[in-house]
Length: 271
Length: 155
Image: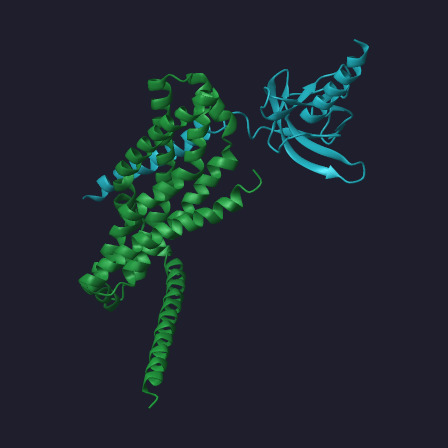
């Protein structure tokens, strides 16, 4: 008699159940991620005692990202130089080009864009590597040989990423400033002395450069943690590994941008 | 790849990264400009500081000799108390005059120091007695208008 009503109640109930499952799963995953991070830190000692493990990861995630980071930095600096000159010369202050290029690179673009590139270049490959190791049961095999996979596989990759990130961000900013110099001074003909001296007068080491380095360090921790966790937590199938790689890139990008907002509001509040 | 070659490439990477940081610190930033030199701190009270900000330069004869490190309001005298740190190698007489000046027509504001002729020099923690406040554009304009208004009937 009250069949339609019963049906709608059933549908509502199942929707709520589904939602509850989702929330439950997400919380469980968050808890696992936190536990994973603590385990990672506890087992980090080995990646510094057996330094060659970390050096190998520095080579793969740091050195091999060098080219794309430097080239992107150069081009972003050149674009900033062109666009900045276009606007500044209207107000007759083209000499401030150096300030504009350096401040926007050192404070924001350097750490953020370098971290985004790093997440898609190195983070995704870390996830793929660990995920595939899990899918082919190499991690289980290590466990059976009494080798802790977190200490042997995960921690060196994490620290490799954390160490690489500030270096890459600094190189990105440096290449960008050089790109801005190339366009501004060499091609357009802004006065070279004013370009550098105004830049030095308004870029403060502790306030601007140092907070950029801190930012890139925080991004390095976030991106590396997401990359190794997604790999370690991957569903051990071809499909599962591919969706882990996807969510590494997506989550890293979101984490970087959200963290950047938070850090910026802390660092540059009273400017 | 052999471990030696790997070490070499990673060494190159780390050296490049550190060189990049050094470039940012020295060539882009102002670390080379004696930022960490020894300084001594002097305060001055102003009736109005205009748009003076913390980290604004302190100049004497146009040369940067220090930076503003703190600005706060003194609720007893209703005055602004400005603290600035001056490079240890520059000494100023006790009767130095502190003014708030503007770089260019609409530029940033900075503290100018006009040295007096006293034999004694300013020490750390001293207060500069003679100051001149920032020029506020509105009061300047209203002064000009009053002057014009009082001139008009006599013509």
